[in-house]
Image (cartoon, rainbow, N blue to C red; front, side, top):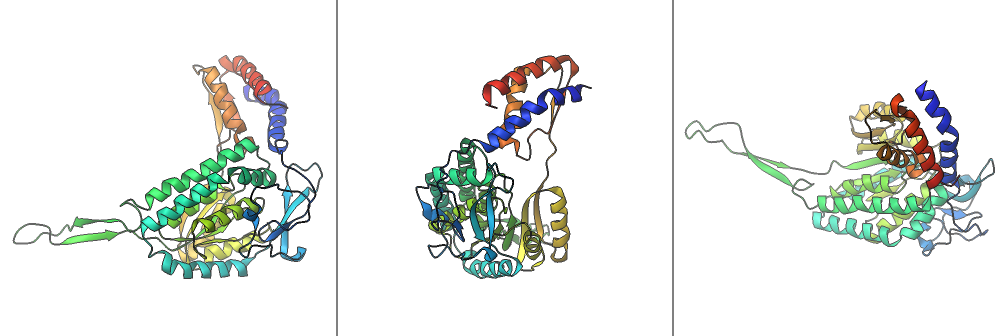
Length: 381
């Protein structure tokens, strides 16, 4: 009964508020444009109005897509039409291209793994600085392709930079790649009783890392995965979400400007239909030594099964199941504040967003009243 009443009273206003925040905070010019702006792609009708349009240019400084058959559409999620407005066409890659990326990544690793931690740290610091300096453009790109509010997109760029800042330091720490320790053996010298020799442990990068990132944090999930890999002397092959490839392309471009050598950070762009075969290539290719995936539990299980043949290391962040529980002795004002942040952060699309409220009957009326007031006051529906 209590859960039903909470759901009934909040459902309409909450969902309308999520819809509003996700779809109408897009304050980006929609002037039609036929200019070629996008990396591996071209603009088809909406101007990004960027300070630095080259953020979305290809490696050769121009678009490489020449026809629709070799590309896939990026859709504006705020479009009122059923099909959605096409904002870009991005290069369509499949398993063969993924295989080539893996080979380039392995070749680049032979040099990258021999660089000093100081060198790798400096590149990550430069990458972080470039992300920060281009916050406005990156936020526009992110909002246009993902639908999140601009203020959220700007916040994500700061979030993304923070991972690079942390791992630039980790590259220098004794606990990082190239570091290690010397410990005495457990064996005694029969004469002196002292440890017979020492054991030297050196930490090294595992090798080529395959990474599959989600659409809800299209830049931060890349820096969170690529940052530690590069700091450790590994190379990264990244498959971003087909819904948000433009943010990945912009981050890739800034990484190259920061000094990441060719092959050290490879990017695979593809549509939904080609994604399974790319995932399988990453999981089954013996060159790839580790897989990092953020997404659904069902897909995580598939990737784990595919990785078993080569016994890959796995880092999986799967699913989300987040009840918001309010007990009888809770501070209701604080609970309302926390509920607003949990439910509406990133338009309610994070892995820890509250998906249901469990409220003690003794505080039900007070919580509903205050939460409804907060929604009406803080959100425009």
